[in-house]
Image 1: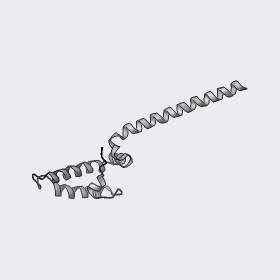
Image 2 (image 1 turned 180 degrees about the vertical axis):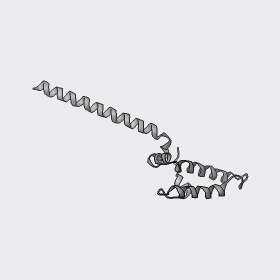
Image 3 (image 1 turned 30 degrees about the vertical axis):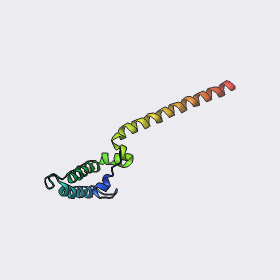
Image 4 (image 1 turned 135 degrees about the vertical axis):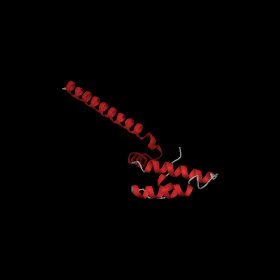
Length: 109
């Protein structure tokens, strides 16, 4: 899957506030709206891209995931779950190894 830069589509910086995103989206939506551009496939494509960009960037949770995971933002919950599981497994493995080392020291004494 190719990375889609939603900030670039809307023409706003990553530091843009909600009002800037909304304004940029509305400007593009008016410019490329299908009613104003009948039978124009390029305008239809740009309208859909602007809608998608706005949908993600105007939602704080989606935007946070997009900023952190980029093209994989839609799988952010799965990624986090896997990372937590790996971290938990490593902690358990470390505890097990520590207790085995401790038992070895006691056996040595």
